[in-house]
Length: 211
Ligand code: 3DU
Image (cartoon, rainbow, N blue to C red):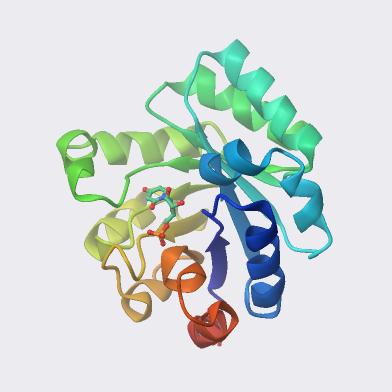
């Protein structure tokens, strides 16, 4: 089953909670990042907790080990179930995120390669492969890989094996859900759902990948 993860990049707390609630029957998790938390406050986590879905903190944590520890402690204390971290900061920094997450019963997903056009500047030429290897070595729960480049997902899958791959970039960024769904464990979809006239109907439509 390929999961459908709603990326809730809205800046209005009530609108975000309402869209998440309407989509809840058709999605497997909710990803929350800086746009929503910085606009609505961390209280949004409590608003979403009632959905009974895993909440993923997309803070792309990328600091020294001590700061990563403080950030991840705060993430799990707030009620998140997983955190997304960058891998380019190196193994000690990533390991710290994994330690905190696993102590709290949570998960860490490491960004191996991003989905936007400019990502090729630094992630290509072997870097994404090295980050994916680092994620495995640091016992991260999985990686983030680009739905906009299915061939790259294939390459990164060779490295991470059965570890989870979550993939953003479907829809608005150009990635095709039917192409990507069979390659990954979950697709992350934001604007195609929350900007739709009927977000719940769109989520329902996309949730066909779960079959
Ligand atoms: O393009 P969308 O609206 O479906 O949103 C995609 C989300 O996934 C958004 O929160 C973005 O910050 C995040 N993301 C990527 O799009 C690409 C990455 O490589 C990593 C995260």
